[in-house]
Image (cartoon, rainbow, N blue to C red; front, side, top):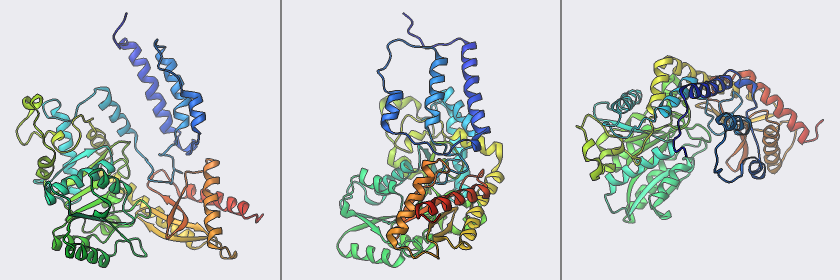
Length: 476
């Protein structure tokens, strides 16, 4: 009985070439594909649900099955008409870099196992520290699976440094537009509901400074211990950036940890308009950025940056006996000491290879283009009698709704027609366009961070939206 998993060299090359050809074909024809895929659980069960087989089958047959059933039943988040959530534009070089990291099964936890992997993470982390004007000599960070894990890591660090072992009176603050991953992280860490302050935002969806000051003062008077504020640098809903300079002033005066969640908008620092919007971000104690969003990396790669790398190592470092032989000197960083994971894949490679290949100039041009096209869409909508802007273009995100001037629609009718427009668009796979809620209104939202998206892609989508709206309202 064979108990190994080996294929011959020729078999491996043949199999690998097929996969590379498939990926290359996908990238070459991405505009021709449908951005949206919908399927029910019953439909997926009918294709995939079966017991694990005792006997194997041809590798080519398994690959054929996957190509025929998995890939066509997955939405294309890199499609030029994928406008919803935060799309995943990615890039081919990073895709291949991930294949290298996986193919060689490189462990990126400790220096002794892979010094090159650790060094690449140090180098790319330094690139990011410089982008955000964090101190390179003292600062540091860690790549994570995504923004959710980066935010969790930041809050764990803030809690330890500000609260020690007793956080029973600790209070943490964030806005009603902060990403849900922050709430999840706070709950995972054992904070009670009464220790969380979710503060309302103003008409532009920015945190109100007065409400923040009042909340901190009230909590201190009640004997509680404010310790952290989570600011947003590009909210998922609207792309809004909180007033970071004002927040930094308050955090410094009150002794609060300032964490900035820039998972969405942080990459905008590479454009002139984005850099202006993000002024004050360099004053944060910790910062989340998410390269698999607007740095055009494939899933999964998030990142946490901190002003002082010892904050991470003092929070997460453990010294079990079985790791005693791989503890190097202080310059040889073991990244399992900087976060939650011991076993870590080499995430830095794709970031490194793509920036080395394309250069920062290409990233800067892409991000600048994304911001510009969203502003162009806003100008187009303001000239239309059919569309109302609810939140203007902010860091490549814009929110709007169908509300024609010549029709006297009630708020419930407006909500209903916009919800149905989205459903029609998605049902016909014209584009990936869904709704969100702003000021209790159902609105359509576009996130335009794909460099492949053209203004014609947007115009075609609005043409469809107008046709569906007329159909829904029986205007034809």
